[in-house]
Image (cartoon, rainbow, N blue to C red; front, side, top):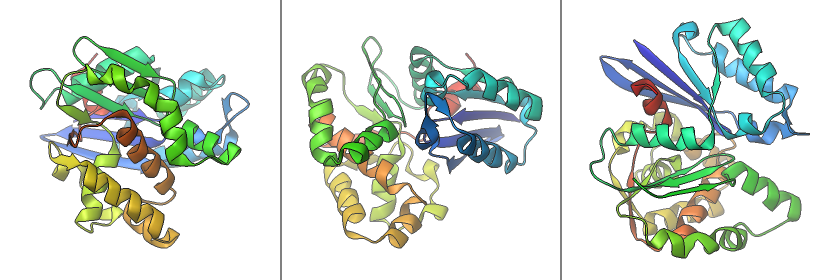
Length: 270
């Protein structure tokens, strides 16, 4: 059995290969626990609790962390704590490494050149075979700015991201989304609750702008209880930001969903 864990700024993602590939995830929102350039004690507790719930020998897992750990001054301290408790050595990826490994994972089932869009909690990577746009902007950092400055999400997304739009027009098609936003657009259309979503069911399927707009409308018109049921607890703000990110960056109508990503790239090896 091969086990890979991606500790993201937003979500803990797990890929397990034991004859067949299985995916799991848990929303941590670690980026919301980032203060004074550190992941605070509450955030560390959230991470530990999530890892404790995994019924695997974590000492044999390949474990990486991304943007929130790159930014945190106490990242090495947390990594040592995790090693002492679970026996794995946490690798904190550079943004270049994150982009390369994510593309490696997505490329398992996508042939030829394509534009890969990976919108994370604290960073965004957009790559083709020979082009790369690495942004120090993510869903949680974006949302924190929105809340602190009382901004309109759609307007702020346009202000922040529209300058990259012309550059991205020269990137190859198709556009592949390695983020949960596209999956949620499909699951909402099929009325599938969050706890019943199987990401692999939507792997390589097509999501279009109309479906993204319906996802935005769902978030804006339903109460918190309904949003939590369909998107997961405290997930609605990140999903809404993700939909506006994609809409702002690309005029394209259709996108391919990939359920593969960094965790599968880790399984393939570095």
